[in-house]
Image (cartoon, rainbow, N blue to C red; front, side):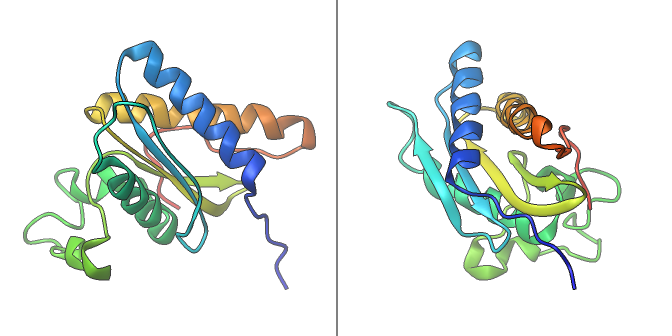
Length: 159
Protein backbone atom coordinates (compact mmCIF):
# COMPACT_ATOMS: atom_id res chain seq x y z
CA UNK A 1 0.00 0.00 0.00
CA UNK A 2 1.15 3.53 -0.73
CA UNK A 3 0.38 6.68 1.20
CA UNK A 4 -0.69 9.41 -1.17
CA UNK A 5 -0.31 13.15 -0.82
CA UNK A 6 -3.10 15.18 -2.43
CA UNK A 7 -3.04 18.81 -3.39
CA UNK A 8 -6.02 20.81 -2.23
CA UNK A 9 -7.35 24.27 -2.90
CA UNK A 10 -5.25 26.11 -0.27
CA UNK A 11 -2.03 24.81 -1.84
CA UNK A 12 -3.23 25.61 -5.35
CA UNK A 13 -4.22 29.14 -4.33
CA UNK A 14 -0.84 29.69 -2.68
CA UNK A 15 0.91 28.63 -5.86
CA UNK A 16 -1.26 30.80 -8.09
CA UNK A 17 -0.79 33.84 -5.85
CA UNK A 18 2.99 33.42 -6.02
CA UNK A 19 2.92 32.98 -9.80
CA UNK A 20 0.79 36.10 -10.20
CA UNK A 21 3.09 38.11 -7.92
CA UNK A 22 6.13 37.03 -9.95
CA UNK A 23 4.30 37.74 -13.21
CA UNK A 24 3.48 41.26 -12.06
CA UNK A 25 7.09 41.77 -10.98
CA UNK A 26 8.42 40.79 -14.42
CA UNK A 27 5.63 42.57 -16.32
CA UNK A 28 3.76 39.70 -17.96
CA UNK A 29 0.09 38.72 -17.98
CA UNK A 30 -0.27 35.00 -17.28
CA UNK A 31 -2.89 32.31 -17.03
CA UNK A 32 -2.02 29.73 -14.37
CA UNK A 33 -3.51 26.28 -13.81
CA UNK A 34 -2.77 23.94 -10.92
CA UNK A 35 -4.07 20.42 -11.47
CA UNK A 36 -4.16 17.22 -9.46
CA UNK A 37 -2.27 14.03 -10.30
CA UNK A 38 -5.00 13.08 -12.78
CA UNK A 39 -4.56 16.31 -14.72
CA UNK A 40 -7.82 17.93 -13.62
CA UNK A 41 -7.77 21.57 -12.50
CA UNK A 42 -7.91 22.43 -8.84
CA UNK A 43 -7.57 26.13 -9.59
CA UNK A 44 -7.21 28.16 -12.78
CA UNK A 45 -6.82 31.92 -13.04
CA UNK A 46 -6.31 34.33 -15.91
CA UNK A 47 -4.84 37.68 -14.98
CA UNK A 48 -6.84 40.69 -16.12
CA UNK A 49 -5.83 41.45 -19.69
CA UNK A 50 -4.18 38.09 -20.34
CA UNK A 51 -4.93 36.32 -23.61
CA UNK A 52 -8.19 34.41 -23.82
CA UNK A 53 -6.34 31.34 -25.12
CA UNK A 54 -4.15 31.21 -22.01
CA UNK A 55 -6.38 29.18 -19.67
CA UNK A 56 -6.63 26.21 -22.03
CA UNK A 57 -2.91 26.30 -22.80
CA UNK A 58 -2.05 26.53 -19.09
CA UNK A 59 -4.32 23.56 -18.37
CA UNK A 60 -2.73 21.55 -21.19
CA UNK A 61 0.72 22.23 -19.78
CA UNK A 62 -0.33 21.32 -16.22
CA UNK A 63 -2.07 18.16 -17.50
CA UNK A 64 1.02 17.06 -19.42
CA UNK A 65 3.46 17.80 -16.59
CA UNK A 66 1.36 15.89 -14.06
CA UNK A 67 0.54 12.97 -16.30
CA UNK A 68 3.98 12.44 -17.78
CA UNK A 69 5.90 13.49 -14.66
CA UNK A 70 8.26 15.88 -16.40
CA UNK A 71 8.60 19.53 -17.27
CA UNK A 72 6.97 20.07 -20.63
CA UNK A 73 9.96 21.76 -22.27
CA UNK A 74 12.04 18.60 -21.78
CA UNK A 75 10.01 16.93 -24.53
CA UNK A 76 11.56 19.11 -27.21
CA UNK A 77 14.95 19.96 -25.74
CA UNK A 78 17.72 18.85 -28.10
CA UNK A 79 19.26 16.44 -28.64
CA UNK A 80 17.31 13.79 -26.73
CA UNK A 81 13.90 15.40 -26.31
CA UNK A 82 11.59 12.48 -27.00
CA UNK A 83 9.11 14.59 -29.01
CA UNK A 84 11.73 15.86 -31.47
CA UNK A 85 11.57 14.52 -35.05
CA UNK A 86 13.21 11.12 -35.25
CA UNK A 87 12.93 10.44 -31.51
CA UNK A 88 10.69 7.85 -29.88
CA UNK A 89 7.80 10.13 -28.89
CA UNK A 90 7.69 12.32 -32.00
CA UNK A 91 4.03 13.25 -32.51
CA UNK A 92 3.03 12.77 -28.88
CA UNK A 93 1.73 16.34 -28.86
CA UNK A 94 -1.23 15.14 -30.92
CA UNK A 95 -2.23 12.69 -28.17
CA UNK A 96 -5.17 13.29 -25.86
CA UNK A 97 -6.99 15.25 -28.56
CA UNK A 98 -4.14 17.75 -28.81
CA UNK A 99 -4.03 18.36 -25.05
CA UNK A 100 -0.46 17.10 -24.70
CA UNK A 101 1.85 20.15 -24.50
CA UNK A 102 5.52 19.81 -25.43
CA UNK A 103 6.77 23.35 -24.94
CA UNK A 104 7.92 25.41 -21.99
CA UNK A 105 5.61 26.32 -19.12
CA UNK A 106 4.45 23.08 -17.51
CA UNK A 107 6.02 21.66 -14.35
CA UNK A 108 5.16 18.60 -12.28
CA UNK A 109 4.50 19.26 -8.61
CA UNK A 110 6.70 16.87 -6.65
CA UNK A 111 6.21 16.55 -2.89
CA UNK A 112 8.28 14.04 -0.93
CA UNK A 113 9.37 12.43 -4.23
CA UNK A 114 5.74 11.90 -5.36
CA UNK A 115 4.27 13.66 -8.39
CA UNK A 116 1.03 15.01 -6.95
CA UNK A 117 -0.02 17.35 -9.75
CA UNK A 118 1.17 19.91 -12.23
CA UNK A 119 1.28 23.62 -12.79
CA UNK A 120 0.99 25.22 -16.20
CA UNK A 121 1.55 28.83 -17.18
CA UNK A 122 0.75 30.62 -20.41
CA UNK A 123 1.21 34.23 -21.39
CA UNK A 124 4.89 34.99 -21.26
CA UNK A 125 7.86 33.77 -23.16
CA UNK A 126 9.60 30.61 -21.96
CA UNK A 127 11.81 32.44 -19.50
CA UNK A 128 8.86 34.32 -18.00
CA UNK A 129 6.62 31.25 -17.73
CA UNK A 130 9.49 29.40 -16.06
CA UNK A 131 10.18 32.21 -13.58
CA UNK A 132 6.52 32.34 -12.53
CA UNK A 133 6.32 28.54 -12.32
CA UNK A 134 9.42 28.24 -10.17
CA UNK A 135 8.09 31.02 -7.91
CA UNK A 136 4.90 28.99 -7.46
CA UNK A 137 6.86 25.85 -6.57
CA UNK A 138 8.98 27.85 -4.12
CA UNK A 139 5.85 29.22 -2.43
CA UNK A 140 4.49 25.70 -2.05
CA UNK A 141 7.82 24.57 -0.57
CA UNK A 142 7.69 27.41 1.94
CA UNK A 143 4.08 26.58 2.83
CA UNK A 144 4.76 22.87 3.39
CA UNK A 145 8.21 23.05 5.03
CA UNK A 146 6.80 23.52 8.56
CA UNK A 147 4.83 20.30 8.03
CA UNK A 148 8.01 18.40 7.18
CA UNK A 149 7.33 18.06 3.44
CA UNK A 150 9.93 18.63 0.75
CA UNK A 151 8.89 20.19 -2.57
CA UNK A 152 11.13 19.95 -5.65
CA UNK A 153 11.78 23.54 -6.74
CA UNK A 154 13.48 23.66 -10.14
CA UNK A 155 12.67 24.16 -13.80
CA UNK A 156 13.96 20.85 -15.19
CA UNK A 157 11.99 18.09 -13.50
CA UNK A 158 11.86 14.50 -14.70
CA UNK A 159 10.54 11.82 -12.31
